[in-house]
Image (cartoon, rainbow, N blue to C red; front, side, top):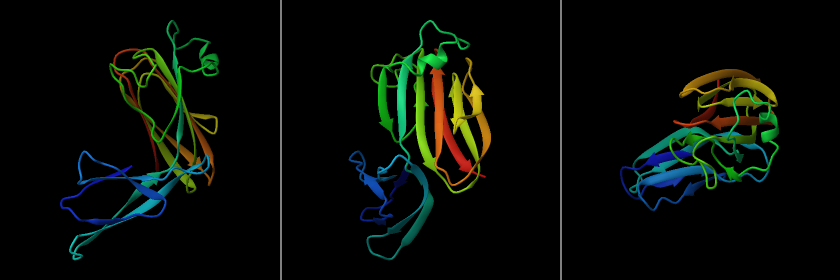
Length: 203
């Protein structure tokens, strides 16, 4: 999502046809721009140019950036009574989840609260998958996790910190062709702080 805060009313904004505006009734000066939902299972990293024109037509501005159109499938589980080295983890991901949802984003700070309806506030786990298509090149995948995290690209493990820890950053370089590529994230929260972030940038 691209978020803009306008300093005056009446600004005319133009975006590519594949992007759309999100209603912001809480603040008429706040503009949120998102990719339209994709019609297939592959989300693309897309460069965007936003044009702004003042109400009197005398001032123009252009903003560029990157928007992602991928959709994550999130499957939530509970893991009471298990440990990080339990042999049951590979089986857990194949059991019936507590909740399944589709989301345009992955992660958040769930400290002291449930991450989703029907999911406990501690000892929960997440299996998240998406498919992306990016320009060929070397990418750095960045994560911040508390607690356990594993990240796979096309079933290849690139980040593995499967233990109890405070908010910790990890980075992994990955060479990607035109794709598509499948990203799979396994995450678990024991107790206390609960943080998950994932991003990738082209080197």
